[in-house]
Image (cartoon, rainbow, N blue to C red; front, side, top):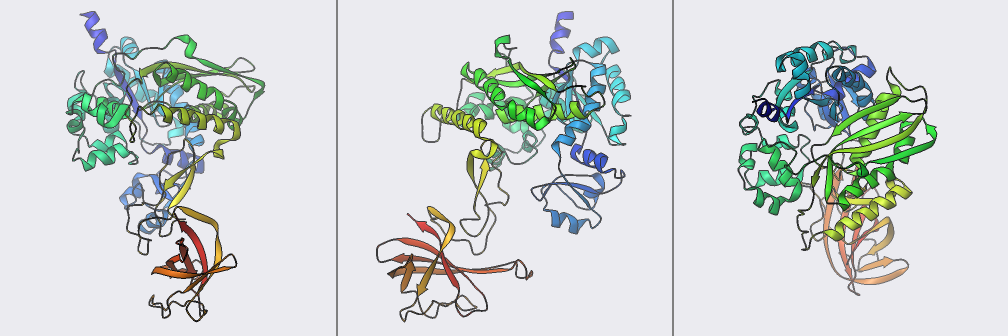
Length: 527
């Protein structure tokens, strides 16, 4: 019976969740009162807001101006993830008094295993009372709520903490089945969630009911990972295990460093090695231990868990968070950081890969990704860029470059209607900067566009780079009148598609003004 009890509590977790942690951090740093309506902004959108702000209609995802229009007294603060980690450090310290080996998912969310604390405090109820005493009264929280939940597995425990409930052993599947499928990714940016919605799968129970083999074939390893979580299966597969010591990597800093950004930059190659060494053996890390040693012997050790598998960027983010809290906390080291060590705690196999869209196993993609990550390590974070499809009316607005490894999230939704947007196909070459041209009618006069978007005299000649060629066909115009209510930022543009006698196709735009003719320029070339 004792063995059965130990097995039943092997995957039992206690999750501690601090709601709206970016708001709590911002309020603490700015020394604002608890009732103040606060919104934390990233990329001009609300990523977190206080309870009083939500009562006024502020929601995540709103643009800054819309949030301020709903709540005129709204205090807008920029997000500071380093400060979030630093402020969360006392909470982690209070948890370590209850149980060693605290696993941090992100600042504001942490978990501990049930088995050890329950033996000491005489059951789960005793652990809950001890956690409440140690955490709820911390000055850094400033009266903010702290929710605690218990369930089987890290994912179910997190959802239990969000509701402040205790799920009975073995009851995680039933507890999760009615939750919306968006629970798998609260940010709403996952393409998997969007695809599940389009397939008519709305709840975790409906997703968990799908055969695992079909989920793996259709959605790949990440989809199978989400499928296990939706079904309340412990997020460590049966083959999950503690990896051998040789997968741990160490970075020695000489001389010692006392700046977080310098340590993170120096550790990039080591973090990449940490991920690649595991991948070379068909493994991916889901939980790792980060050890940091100062030149005077002080040490900080934290365990970091990820909802999926850890990439190089994920490892570096957690390095920054931990060092920010350690170097700026009450028990800060007396010297610089001398050594950093990454130790994998839990890994999962990555042998089953979804095939690439064009066929094959995708091994070439993995090698290319490693090569790009290596170049980025040598030349800096912004040296390798990848395009992201964004929302906008012209091709330049619809393309944005982000550093390799960052989340390729658009700033503006490409799916929204954009009146005046150019029809397909899109041009293949964008000119940066655009090239001035002459667009003339049959009488060699500049082509005019009326206020209503008419062209009295059609284009007949196009002058590019001193060479004038005949125009054989044209399409348009597509007028755009942007921000007409603001004289400083208003813009009136008209676009035409032009094909010359040599078969070359151009996207030509003209800036409208009080002058008689627009100033024409070539923005792009069609292949």
